[in-house]
Amino acid sequence: MSLMRAAVLVEPRRFELQTVAIPEIGPDEVLVRVDRTGICGTDIHIYNGHYAADRLPMVPGHEFCGTIAALGRDVRHLAEGQTCVVDINIGCGTCYWCRRNEILNCPTMVQVGIGRNGAFADYVAVPARLVIPAPADVPPEVLALVEPVSCVVRAARKAEIRMGQSVVVLGAGPIGNLHVQLLRLLGAAPILVADLSEARCQMALEAGADRAVSDPAQLRAEVLRATGGRGADVVIESVGNARLYALAFELIRKGGHVAFFGLTGAGETVPVDILRTILEENSLKGSVAGMGEDMHDALTLLSHKRFRTAAFTRASYPLDRIGEAFATLAERPGDLKTQILMH
Image (cartoon, rainbow, N blue to C red; front, side, top):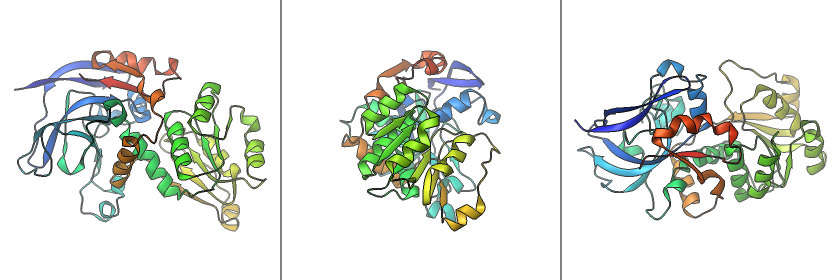
């Protein structure tokens, strides 16, 4: 039996580096040798026991890249040794939602590293249909960003962002920064960011935001000033705070849109003024993860260097220091992403 290393989250806030069997693959699966895996906000929720605690012990990790190590006997369109990224959303492939690329609503959907063992390990087994070959000349630290970039690609699609639209991004953390960069590519203007961290506000300005606000008391006035007194066309909540969702409705213009993106705790709600929403024809739409074509588009954008990635790729830890990597995240606000190195 061949063995590998895996960082197993045995209980909230405690990883164990274990030697386990390399996953066996089925006829339509692929074994991926993992190169790098990024730490996602969802991983932090899992680590702290706020999400998927009923699935522990588990190997998390879903923002990854690697090379194809073995093919199932029925796989013909891929080759061993290919560099790749992986769409982590495993649906049945035939239901109403899968046909519409709304795979997270599939009744049998499971996600690599969230609902089943993931990529904080030397190897991971995945369905071959979800493996996306990647250019070999793109650095692995950049390829490991494909999954998070796909999430903002999907959010922009769902919010129907257009050129010249004013957009407010609540939160200038890793995903907020990626939102800003994609909004700039799409021609949104002006782009405003709000975050309590002045350092992350400055990073958002460097990423393409037109204005950044670190004082909550000044935010509404700044939005009105930047939009001719109307309010923003779109507000994206990228933190996962119910109070910020409520604030978002106060920042949109009449006929504006709130993009629900940041994950809150289960059962959290936000009050909505029903009459105002009707009379002003306001709207909201949820979006959580990239899938299908979102992944391909994210790979294309990153391959052609459309994103500034330095702040996302400079912090890395070997697998045997994964506990330290998680424990020190809050002490490193300048590192928008931390990646775990497998080899």
